[in-house]
Image (tube, rainbow, N blue to C red; front, side, top):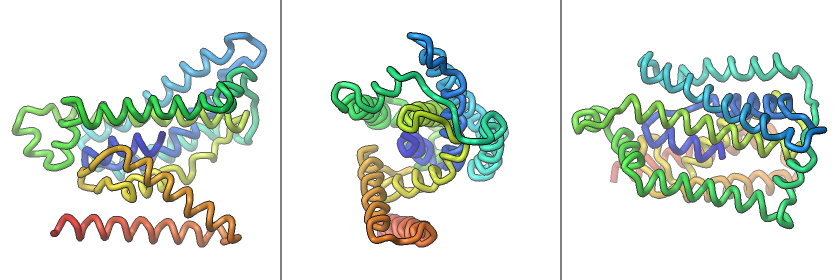
Length: 262
């Protein structure tokens, strides 16, 4: 989910390093807002998590578009803010979630429910990016912001919505994590931004905004997951895994730049 959100941001030629912080904050808010003893006690929690994710994305969007600040600087700063808020709300991992909610998002419909929900969201994001005027505007901005502006595209509005959508997708990721872990952890998102960027670039999205299909992002997620699982299988230290992931990102960026020159 976070990688799909990162794809929308990178389509505009920007970047969002705060996705992990948004995921963690939404995870914490979801669990704290949930009433495990009420039949519908999970509904307010879903709304609260979605609202927080949307608000975080909107904050990034306002700072980038209205403040005319560099996305990388803005999202480094907001990462600290979101991480701090999550830790303030829940200094230590804990909490519990609604049993029916957790069961549905992990084992519902014999385990198919989470997969089907993910496919639905992927199809919606793919359609948005490939088959709508908004998606075309995203690509135009990523190609050349000045050229897009000269053709009448409302660059600021389009970019703002991209950050809002990314925040909302992070909220969905935080909700899924709440069900999977049956608890909350304010530090859960510390590697999400790096993973999302790597998966997005490996999947074919150039940092300049060029992209073939959001399906490539999902392919990138699977590639990174397979590599990480293989490293875990062979007992490779997590420190070396971070090094490996960094090298993969550098290689993907280099290949993208080489392809662009040709």
